[in-house]
Image 1 (cartoon, rainbow, N blue to C red):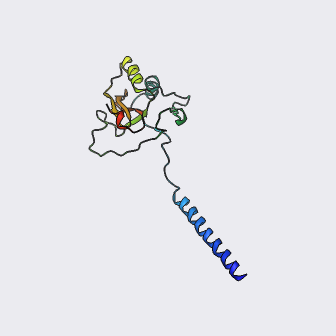
Image 2 (cartoon, rainbow, N blue to C red):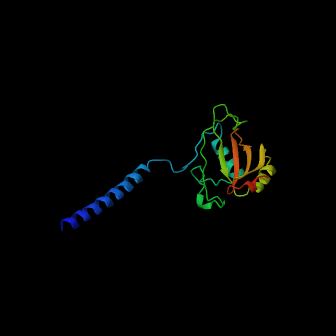
Image 3 (tube, helix red, strand yellow):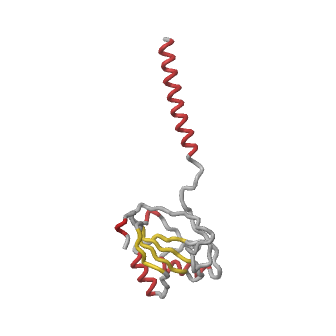
Length: 162
């Protein structure tokens, strides 16, 4: 009986150690950022007019409260959805000609169609389309001088480059 009890206690101890390790591992994996919950910035002049520009030219549907909601479930890109987060070097010219210290990259469903709409509306295309391994890119500037990156995402493949 003593041997059976010792064996059961040993098995129970092993189970608890393994289970406890998993619980501790799960606890170590909490308390982190899981995505971008929103993008908020101050208008330099007319926030309502700027929001209307984004709605008219980029198709961001504005709500009564003045902002837009872009839901991942409505994104049909083949990459399954992702958000890139990056801190650029202080001397980077990546955001030029904008003086802003940020640039927002917007995922789009059909960049060539959007470029046609923007061109028809006399919105200058700074660069693009550019075809990279992970999709097609173009850059524009909003009415307040903020550079915007437009991205039609694709699954990473060298064949996407042109």
